[in-house]
Length: 309
Image (tube, rainbow, N blue to C red; front, side, top):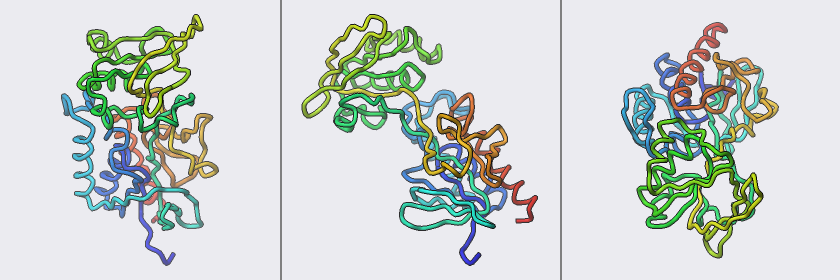
């Protein structure tokens, strides 16, 4: 091999990827994190984090900054590159980037995370950035004094609804079921907030407007009744999709596109490990991503050691 080869290349700079970087750096492995946008992943866009040990409450950007500073302390490189492919070679892995550069690694940790699932309804694409958003932390302040809808019933939907009440006049949570899936603590806060209302057993059929979002057509899933809901914005939190398109044919994926890997983070391809939201698991939280990152780095170190690499 004529080109420099990293001991570990980590694809993704969220909590899983950064933790893997810390552990790999501490193990004196030549390590690089490849991140397409900015470090932190979904964590960076979270307004308030109340369930990460050591912090009673911290915002996503703040926790991201602390983690990144610790990563850099261990001489781990962070390169801002969008990964487009991964190919096993005879004695290394080749990671392809959008800028045309190929990066070589003895082991790879997949920590590319996930992206918001879309509604796939008329008007969603048309009004993205003009009233349709997937990030209350990013866009909430643009709706000061206005009425907005939040679609979803899990932790993210309720957390972001509570965050939006800092700015907006009213938040209507639209949920396809008759009860929330969020934790009881979040539910209690939402039910007690006078700015939050609910539309149960309901799904959005169409997002409408002229230049920006003006209203939603909402159907009751039980009765079929259509209701027009005037809003200035709609925030969508109906789940996530793993960022694994570049991995098809490289490692085994489950029917939903997640990398098949157990608690040991090992994938179907020796030398490739998966950590965080990208892998098959029962709970996707910052703390579980961090645990995965530590496990993946140690697994990579063991893989290298056993092979004398």
